[in-house]
Structure formats: C-alpha cells, structure tokens
Image 1 (cartoon, rainbow, N blue to C red):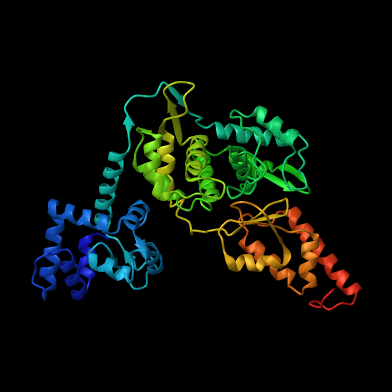
Image 2: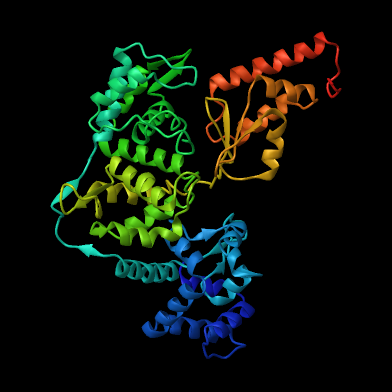
Amino acid sequence: MRLNECLNHASVPTLQRIAKSLHVACVPYSKLDILQSILEAWLDPDARKTMVHRWCADWDAAMRRIVLLPRHAFAREEMASLLAPYGDGPVDRALEAGWLYVHPDPATKFPLIVPEDVCQACHAHYVANWRSKVAMRSDDPPCVLDEEDAILADLETLVAYVRDHDVRLTTTGALYKRNLEQVMQLFKIEESLELPRWRFGYGKRTFAYPDRLALVYDFACDEGLLIEHDGRVEVDDARWHAWKSRLTVVKLRRLLRHYVISYRGPIPRLPDVLRLILRLGDDWLHLDSLYDLCLPFLNPFYYDSMSDVWRTRIVKMLVHLGIARLGSDAPECPPEWFQTTELGQELLSRGDEESTADLIERRPALVVQPNFELVVVSPDPRLEETLAPFVERIPSDGVRAYRVLAHTVAQGVRAGHDFDAWRACVARHALYGIPQNVDRMLVRWAEAARLELEAHDVEPGESWA
C-alpha cells in the first residue's frame, strides 16, 4: 500500500496527530483537507526530504532494519520488538509520526504497515548515506581471489570419495583424520585441519571440521546426499542424481540458504548484513570501511570477536560460496578490497525476494557436542538450572560449558530428578539435536542408574549417605 491509501483509511484523530507531528497546516476538522495537506507536503521534494531525515534520525536503528526487510507489513508484537529501545508506547508514537499505519484489513496477521513509497524514500536515504561512507575503487586490484563455484566441485569430490571408499565415523560422529586428509588433498580449496578446542554454533559438525568443509558436509547430509548410518557414511544415489540435474545457480542458492540458516544462530543479524551488501552493488569496496558500516549488525560470539565474525564467518564464507571476491595490492598483502560477484548479486537478490533469510528468528540456547559437553550459547538461567541435576560444570574462561557423564546421570536419577523430562528439554533447546552417540549413552546410563536403584531397593530421593 502507498501513503495515499494508508492516509485514506486512517481515522480523523489519527490524521490530526500526523499533521501535528509533521507540522502540516490544515483545517483540523476536515478529513479531506488534512489528507490533501499531508499528501501535498509529501509530494514537495524539500518537505519530503525533511520528513525522511527526521524519521531516519528519530527511529534510526529500527528504520535501518525496516528498509532492509523484503516486506513492509508487520505483526504488532514484531513492531513492538523493533521499537522496544525507544521508550514507552513506541508503536503509538510511530503511528503519530506518519511513517507507520494500521492495515485497513482487520483480518490480516500483519496489521501494521509502512507505506511502500515511505519505505522507498527512507531506503534511498540510507543507501546514499551508506555509499558515502564506504571507500571504493573503480579499477580491479592487481591480485584477486575468486573461488567462483569451486564449492560445488568440492561437494562432488566429497560425494565421489564417500562412494569409492569405506568411510566410517568415530564414536563422536566425525570422519577419521586419515579420511579428512585424503579428502582435503582432493579439494580445490584446501583448509587446515588443526582446530581449536572450542568449536560450536556454526553448523552441526563444526566441532570436527574446518569451516568450509563443515558447511559442505552439513549441507550434503541435510540435503540427503550423504547418509550417516550405523557408524558409516553412504551416498544416496537417487538424491545425488537429482541434485546433479539442477542448474548451478539453483545449487548455489540452496547452499546460500543453508549457510544463512546455520550461521544466523550465533549471528542473528546476518540477513541484514547480506541485504546491506546487496544494496551497495558490485563496486570494489574497502574491507575496513565496509566493516565499520556493518558494525551495527554484528555481535561477538564466545570465542569470536566482532572482527573474527566479520572476517571469518561472513567475508570468508561469502567468498567460499562464490558470492564475493577479495582483492589486494600485492600477493603478500592481506585482502583489502571486497566485491560481490555478478552471480552473488543474483543470488542475494533472489534470496531477498524469496525471503530466504527472513525466517522465524531462533536464538538457540544450547549446543550438545559429541564429546558429551553441553555449551550454553544464549545464556538462560532457567535452562542452566534445568541442566544442573545431570551435569557437572567445566571450568572455562568465557564459555558456559557442562559435561554429562555416567556418574552425573546416576547422581541425578538417585536424587529423584526426571531424566526423561531432562533429556526432552535438552533435545528441545539443542540447536543441532543430541548426537546419536551421546543420546545412546545417556539412555544406557539412565537405565543402569534405575536398575541400580531397584537392586538396592532404594526409593528415588532418599539419601545414600
């Protein structure tokens, strides 16, 4: 809906408050005169510029998010969440400010709307502002790193390797190091297999594999191309043949969607970053100034600083996905320039149109690792209180981590706590579920603890002292 339609459906008291907020002179008791006066002010370039500047200044953080979203209608709770930092009654004040309106259809599930032309004007204001803050260059840097669609070739290599070898999994559910080394030697893009101890949050198997391989392997499993069964990895030939018949752009779009879904837990504003990058076009942009521009959408995540999140989790992964390329002024210099590829512009645009990244926001609270460690991603005192009976705390700096073992499970069962309810709670809050090896042992330990209670004829909750 455009502004004139929204104004036409607004009540006289609403129009009066908008006219007062925008300092529009009119006959206050005539709906037609108020409506025409507001529209005349909007159609005047200078007055419209003043309105847009005021809206973007007064509601800056919220307006930045709104103009980047692919839709302009919102649930009341959603808008209240966006405007929460702006004090008491922010939705009512936004309705009076003249940029937010009530949808005329009372049956819609998105009752609040930002008019299309208002959103476009604010969008243009922000894009011009963003482009003015980013250093650009017109020529190509001497050294350019562009992986194009190498990730698809390496996915095919991984599937071919699994088909041609007897690939087994360790007790933690990971490939053996010998297999990893052989696969990495066959890949077009090689990564170091040396990993830090704490790795979680960026995909189900990020604990065991380097970033790019973890993304490829997780994607292959989620698509059903690879199947883990009874400690082995096998290829689903029917799904693989169907996958190979797809167009390259379709394959890369599915990989992009998988990346956004996997990474938006630790980086909730990742979709906003991608939309902002899309708005800046395909010019060569200086990495540091682009980082400064994206800072409002970034956050640290445990062992990753905001700079790590930007360089490693966003920029590096966009290069792996063929969406961006990097440039430097000499072979020995670190990358200084960033550019979205032509294919990247198409992928990001289609993702925006399809609301690929506009999924229901999920802030996972827990990651269960195959080594029986539970890491609390989003601190939640109630969840940690629920975990406590069956776990022990792991001393660590900056990471809220716990360990579940046979004796901690037995301790919880002896104390009379409901293990089945605890296990269901862990499964519900775990971002990637409970690994099979962990789940199997948890059930076995709980059963053993119950049998021990029965053998000693001790009622749950009694002291063993």
